[in-house]
Length: 308
Ligand code: TXA
Ligand code: MG
Image (cartoon, rainbow, N blue to C red; front, side, top):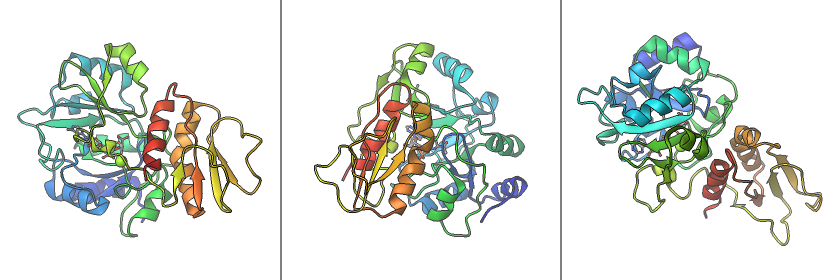
């Protein structure tokens, strides 16, 4: 059910869940200080309650009410907010966040999104909004209002803010220790963060859940997806490609372009996965792309989508 901005704000005030646009992906949003509202997010998304949510804020002053900002966090905020960077920081003793928002952790994942409608909602509400990506757990992420509508009951209110500009989830960086660690690659490349705060390392995807966005199988279409071209193509196949289309792809294969730049590819990656899946093919083939810029985050999503 599509709603206007004022209706979305009114519903959020009442503790309802509303799907909102951000510059990264759509978020399934609710008042992050309201445990019952947050519980409804987990239920709708079919998400285990040990997997914490990101709290979204209008600006850094609002963020500072709930978490302790250290020097690295200040620098990152100056450089990347509003925008697709999420920081994990220790909560303030007087943090307003519901225990369930942070899954009982002493830390919180916080972000200031840049999408103008999300900004307007956050500013008028004066409350943090908990918002995981607006997809059922494990499914392909939603980057348009239609992607959201197709996954959830008709009763879910959705604010349509157009197609998401970045198209990939935020980069998540853990700044709770002296050694900053990237928990999830995303909309801000690692190199940009290192240019701002010095070396950061990649958290090991060893199953210990720091950021369960790291769960191995994720972003999964229903049809099998592989990263290398098969020796023989099945009758119904989709090829998702970066740059120029290779001449040797058989003519019966449906070819979907990602564009010629990492940013263009990020913007349409999930759209292409949704389109491919809607065709219900026997096989989806999506080779990895060059790792520069957003390429490594794109490849991360493709690799997870390919996990059988
Ligand atoms: O771009 C995005 O980040 C989108 C939009 C809606 O803002 N949100 C998003 O949320 O991707 P979600 O729930 O799909 O991913 C949030 C990730 C999860 O992997 C979760 O485990 C991690 O953030 N996370 C949240 N709180 C955390 C914490 N305190 N420590 C470590 N990881 C945390
Ligand atoms: Mg997600």
